[in-house]
Structure formats: structure tokens, C-alpha cells
Image (cartoon, rainbow, N blue to C red; front, side, top):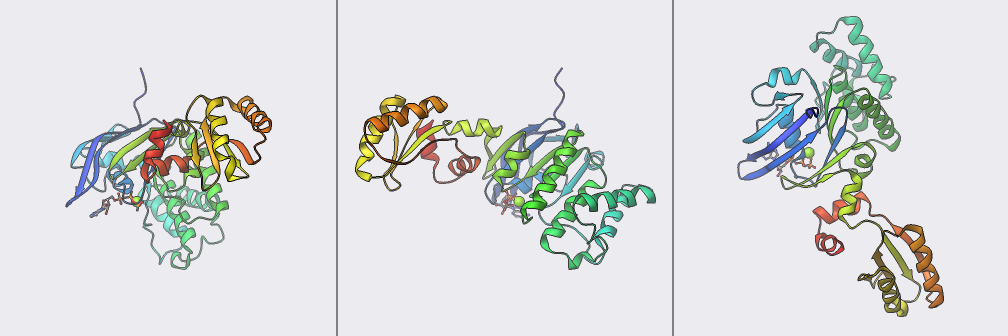
Length: 321
Ligand SMILES: Nc1ncnc2c1ncn2[C@@H]1O[C@H](COP(=O)(O)OP(=O)(O)OP(=O)(O)O)[C@@H](O)[C@H]1O
Ligand SMILES: [Mg+2]
């Protein structure tokens, strides 16, 4: 029997006055995995996180976390989750360490245990030096780290992280990724929102793209890239006069219509042929004496996918598919 997903969302909708923040969202996240929610500003990511952490109620639909219903079992649900919000809820007049210890108190940990966990979190998030300073003196990135740390003190089996690494420098971001990977290996389930494709690609087992309150794509990073039609062979001619010949040559080789970007002097065709196809194309260009500035296989990036799904390039994606 398949294990029940740790996070289950079925047809959830939420309006704020006239604004439909979520319009029939469904998703599932298995235990010990990371689900990344992507989407442009205002897509509904934070709204979904707030529903799943019982801060607000859905108007319609059903959602459970660790089997607890967000509407009818909020109290037990809260005991199994940690939340680091987009807007950090920390007490500026306490030190970083005190903020963490306070959370340990809420979890009814004894003094030795909450001190130990606060110390551990400070170390893991590179805040040991700052731990004894008042939070109001922290930089933005330090606050964010402490906020993520605060969600970890209770060692919850399910973590909700709303843009956990926004504004962090690359090294700190990397440290946090590593930490999260270790937690997930240890069985933690994570639902995170992010604006960073690199982050989704590195951490997420599954990516859900939201746009104006709807799921517009759902899959692994590779599956989302395949939406754009997979690999493309791309050539950039040295001389614009060769563009048409290059397009004809590649079209013939690939057996399909090439895409031509005259301004960039680029021609591309879909290919599943890998290096063999690249070599064949190179040889043909040489035979035809078409000079190239560049020739290579290009796999669409998650950024391409995101832009094509949510931006003004949806036509291109449809053409490619
Ligand atoms: N408390 C609220 N009152 C009124 N409207 C709200 C409220 N919270 C969110 N909204 C609206 O709901 C929509 C979704 O907002 P949400 O904060 O969930 O987006 P988001 O995907 O988290 O965006 P961002 O990337 O900017 O964080 C937006 O149109 C927003 O203006
Ligand atoms: Mg948000």
C-alpha cells in the first residue's frame, strides 16, 4: 500500500475580498522529500503556506499535514510543523540565542535540552558569534537565518519555509541547503517557496509552479524542462548572410522546422541525438563552408521553463512542444 503523503492539498481555494489568491490548488508531498513552490509575485505561494500552517482557513477544498486536517485538527497539526515565514517573527529586544531558547520553552523542552538545541542551531546557521547580540542589531540575512533556525528548534517532522534563502549570500545559502538536505535524509518533509531556480533544482524532488492561484506545472525539474521540448542544438553564424543556409541545413538534419533568431544570428532545432548529432552538424557546416561563432547542445534551464510558463513566452513553448 502506498504511504500516505505527508502534505496533501485537494482543490483548495482562498479569496481575499475580490482577489482569488488560490483557485483550486491540489498537490501532494511524500515523507522525507522537498516540494518547491515556484511562481511570480502574488501567485499565492505564501497564502498556501499560511493555510497549511493553520494561520488562515481555506474557503474551499481540503488539506492535511501528517494526516491532520488543517481546518478541524489545527492543534495536533501545529505540534508537528515548523514555519519560517517570509516576514520573520523574531523579538528584536532579545538576543538570537534567547529567541531560540524561548521557542524551546514553548515546546516544553527542559533547560539543558533547549540550550543544547539553541547552540546547535546557532552553529549550523553560522550565528555563533552573533548569538549573544540583540536581534535588532542583526543584518537582514542574519535575521532570516535566525528565523529559519527558529523553525528547527522543535525538530518538527514537517517544515514550511517561505523564501528561506532570499537575501542570503551564496555561501550562507549553500550552508543552509546542506543543512536542509541532511534534515530530509533524516526523514524531515519540507515544503518551501523560492524565487531561485537553482535552489529548486538543487533541493526539490518535486516542483509545483503556481500562477494567479492555479497550478500551471507540477513535476521534477527534468520533467518541467521536457515541457520546453528537451535539448536543442543551437548554432550562431558569423555572417548574417549565412542564416538561411544554416537554417535549411539544420532543418534537414533534424527533420523539423528550425527556430531562427535573426537578431542574434542563431538557429536552433530540437534534438535527442546528443554529441553524435552535434558532430554531424559540425561536419555539415564545414562542408557547406558556413562559418560559426558557436555551436552546442543546449538544455533548457529551469529559468527558461519558468519564464515560458509564467511570462510572455508561452507561445514559444507551445511551438517547441
Ligand atoms: N491578507 C490579505 N489581504 C488581501 N489580499 C491578500 C492578502 N494576502 C494575500 N493577498 C493577495 O493574494 C494574492 C496572493 O498573495 P501571496 O502572498 O500568497 O503571493 P506570493 O506568491 O506569496 O507572492 P510573493 O512572491 O510576492 O511572496 C495576491 O494578490 C495578494 O495581494
Ligand atoms: Mg510570498
